[in-house]
Length: 344
Image (cartoon, rainbow, N blue to C red; front, side, top):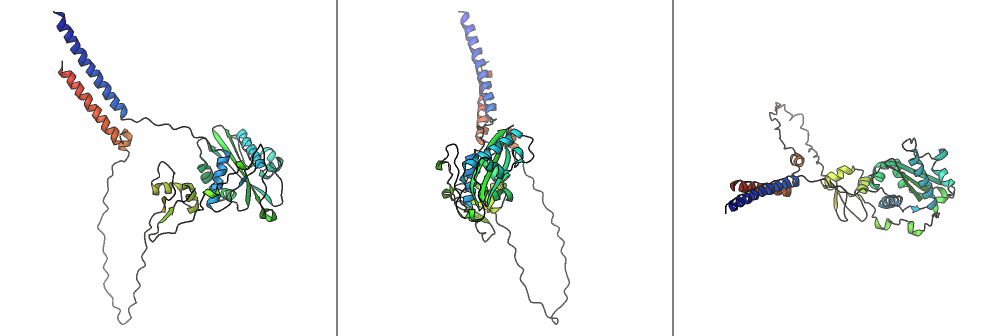
């Protein structure tokens, strides 16, 4: 009979020890839960040649221009130059200069592209990091007037695109065949290569609504209603505003996605300037000299103290749900510790 109390005491001690372990686990889980692990997204793939051409044609359609037609020989020529730049990386002096000092026109002729009087090959090139997007390519790297001219050429008809990768960077070549004179009055036929056909053409103009600039309101603000196929970058290009300013005005912090019918603020209200009312000048007979009083302002600005907005973010507790879970689990842990202590 003497061994039963011993067993009972041991069981009580084990029970208290188990409660302490459970409490420690809950407290640790609460602490870990209060810190959110960073979410790693899938690696972004660089845009393909046809994706770039589709984006260029979308830009052209937003200006009411016909899409470029994909030409097989221009694709070969552009890809050859992209491969050449990748092989020369990072020792690139001029991205328009190819093997043997050739330019865009000569490289196109070398692969058999037909020469027509008035033909002019316009070329854009760029180098972007691996995470570069098609928007960065078109609206940033090629967002200046010279490169935009290549993409929005009113006499451009055929297009070729090349993409190559080396040393963590991607190299892009865009070749556009523009025709002047009589050659520009008719549609030039495309050349096919490697089995390309009509299916490779990017006829997307019917899905893009040309951008019509909205007129300022009575308060000076400009609000654009999004139409089919229009993007935030496209609106920034048309209205000649900074893309970051558009994001800030419209609360688009983490995404550039916009939808048809959405109201995009291009410019906020501006302060109206009132024109002072003109009064008739008094006649010389009625003019009197009145003493002038000068008032000195004694108001001083009041300093406004603002709490640092990143305090909770720095602690990882900006999410109220995680904040609540943390304290609930912490309280349960404390209660279990107290219960285990009371059993001694």
